Image (cartoon, rainbow, N blue to C red; front, top):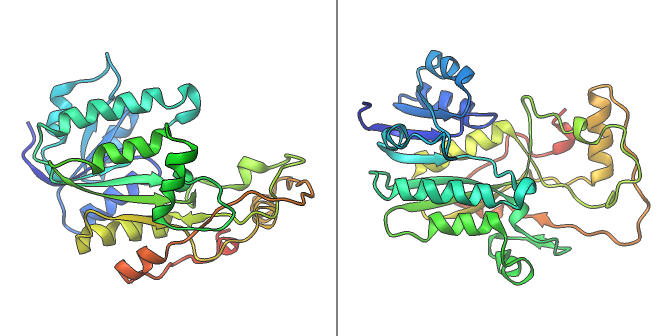
Length: 275
C-alpha cells in the first residue's frame, strides 16, 4: 500500500500527464491514474506512482481507488463524455468518486471543467453567468458535477473552466477540415493553449487559491472562420467553409478574474499564433 503523497492527478491524458510530470519535477510526490494498462509504464518512467482506475463497475477496484486518494490535493481531470448518454455515465462515475473521497484525507480539490457550462449569451461572459445556465439548462451535467464537489464541508474545491484546448496532439484543424456550410463563422472563439493550462493549474496549487472559480481562455478571440481556416492550412488540410449569416450566436469568455487573482499573463494570448 502507498503512503500518503502530496498530490494525486486523476486522469493522466493530454493535460494530466504533462501536469503530473511538472509536479514531479518541482519536487512533489505524485500519484497518477489512467484507464489504460499501456500507460502505466509511461507514468512509472516519469516517477509518477501509477494507478489503473476505472470508476465504472465491474472494473472499479475500491481498494486501489482508496489508495490513490491518500493525498492532500486531488487534481480531478476526467473529461466528460456527455454526448453518448447525455452525461449519465459521467454523473455516475463522479458520484462513485465523491463517495470514496468522503472516506479519504483529501482536503483540496482542483476540478478541471469547461466553459461549455455557459449558454451563448451574445456578450462577454464571466464566472457568475452560470445563473443563466440554471434558467436555460437546469439539468446541465457538468455544472451539476462542479457543484457536487464544490458544495462539501469535507474539502475546498477550486474549479477552472478551460476554453477549447489546443496544443500538443490536439490540432483543431483536424476537427473542421473539409467541412462545408458551417454556422457562426463570425462568432468569437474561446481557446487556450496547453502551456497556459499547465501554467495556470501549477500557479493555483502553488498560490493555494482554493475555493475559487476561474475562467481560462486566451486573451484574443478571433472569429471561427479565421481561426479554423488558419488551423487547417497550418497542417496542410482542406479549409472549411462557413455560411454567411446575418445573426450569430456566441459567448466571449472573460478570464479577467483569473488574471487579476493569479497575476497571470498568458504565454499564448492569441489563438491565431497557436499554429
